[in-house]
Length: 291
Length: 341
Image 1: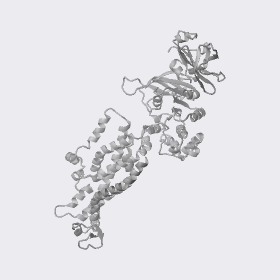
Image 2: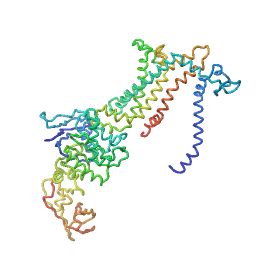
Image 3: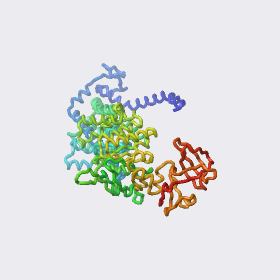
């Protein structure tokens, strides 16, 4: 890099930082307000002007609200909500593990064994994601009711695994394309079967890709609402559906408990995202090195 | 008794009309033999190794292994790579970047089929490391090694498993000349002491001549000639093989040109004379004029013009020559190669 480019970068740095800060502020504001609301008493949630600062008391016309853990206590003492939170974790984690595992194998196959019609097959895999979920919800719920899969966690795992599979297959194919076949060929000549070579040589090298794929897959299963709404009723309900149920009828939204439940719903995925942050960045830029 | 026999191996890539990468290649490798496959880029050398190892599925042909058992040769063409008792060293040192040197060396021994104990693996790895002078490099990452060290590790990875047949795909091509010379000697010594078979692929005729028990010349997917280095050098079957060996290259003359120079002719169309076969005598009235003079140390390489025929000739450095000098040329008729094409 030339000295001129460096100087240019230095001058632009404060501007860039300010821009990023402004963007972070705008995009984080709703999340911040949700988290703050989770700690408010009902009286403070609807107060105008809005109150942002937690305190021990809430003077008239101030920015202070009275801090309470009551909403969380209420949500966490509700066994139903806890069970649904568990459903969300269970269904998301298992379906992600399955779709990443199967997608890795499929991606490896598409990457290493070009076959007649392979590109069409790959497109077909992707096309399973093209219909809006609600368009297929009715036939699927019909099939599920005949198969006894309605309102079961297994049913949701099956469905989420399938609809994430298109995505994981494509992503894993791209990541595996970047790994030279010479490594697994060497491993096979070293006396390992193709499966051993895949597990010991190819997949460890694809680890950042697997992490990135897993994060995206987990988020999409975690957030899924349409199928969860149509296919579950009591046993297998997941958090997105539960949160919607907390809003209830028109008799007034319980903002505090709603915000507390949403915050609880947000925490695991944020934690997982932070854990995977390093891989995620490597994973997203992984395919960009060679055109 | 040959340990391996390759029979009619044919490999085709892409559309049916294209020239096959390998076209009916047949040869044998003895139990302790070092066979060098010599060919230019694109001659099918690498494809040949990949087919023998099982990485490439041939369209036709068989690979027979004779383990010396009572059942005789066994067809191993349908076995997967890990089912064949072979190890391969690649040109571009495929070491596993996420493993240390030690783990790289141990990797082939961790194959489930071998079922080796941790102690046995440890022992074999340290033995291989000692053989190759890598003992103090075991904990390094492959990225911290020099080119020569990386290739040593690759060779070590091939030999820990003690395979019956080594396949070497231009293992020294990316090393510098000095290191290459030393590694050639090492590989030769290693193969001798292990007593295993080796198929060594190269485009370098010097490497081929110094390594080989036998050379197999491959061109455009076909075997042109196979035999001991000296035989290939002295009795090439045609001009393609003749041109491939020796530097400076052989002089090929048409029978008309040979006649003009007064050489004894035969019914064959081409005459080949190696540069070192010419006897060069200074003679101000001679027909040959030196146009280029190169001093190579132990000898001189001359380019001579004989009535429009350009010849490459080597001469001892004691012969003081400068460009423009004139010479008489002679050749022992026994040193003239007569070739059909």
